[in-house]
Amino acid sequence: MTAPIPIAILASGEGTNLQALIDAIGAGRLAASIRLVLSDRATAPALQRAARAGIPAHVIVPSATAETIKLLRSANVALVCLAGYMRILPPEMIAAYPDRIINIHPALLPAFPGLHAIRQALQAGARVTGCTVHFVDTGIDTGPIILQERVPIAPDDTEASLTAKIHRIEHQLYPKAIQLFAEGRLPSSRQPS
Ligand code: GRF
Image (tube, protein in one colour):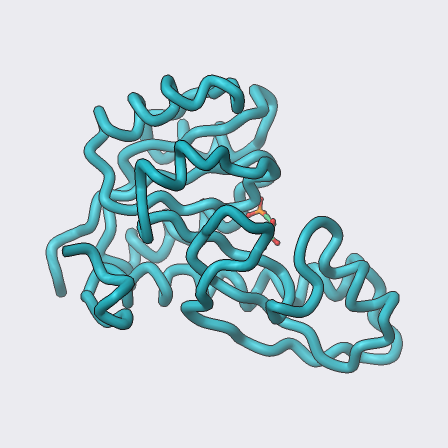
């Protein structure tokens, strides 16, 4: 396996994707080292998951971009992974980590970007949705796609049941995408120089 890539995770909520990354690293499926977890919500369960795993974690003020960048730089991370981070990143942050910020979104982008993607898919009567790992640019869920996986929608699916199905797939897909990045297997224009 390649040398572990140092990463940071930004999360606002439950942190089940953070947990999936912690578990994938533990199981040897992902050559990464989570150096830092940052959250804009002091009560985010993601922070407790970080603490349980012995990962340094901080609450950030989303408007204090320079402070956030300072934290990331001092942890020397090569990749920033958004995992349920419910804020739009300021352009200064994206400029500080060009092609080194990725996100996981619960739909097959470019369909159903933005908030409530799972509800949007149900309301549209879609038969298939899924999840997407993509690079973050200044748009809302518009950056280049890294990996996607489909999730069929059953006629009796509710928002809760579909969320559970998508989460199960996300927890496999995110470690895979980060592993591809770590191994330098993404298109060369998107690979760190
Ligand atoms: C995930 O569904 C992710 O796609 C979206 O936010 C949710 C975060 O869930 N961006 P969790 O906090 O990782 O459990």
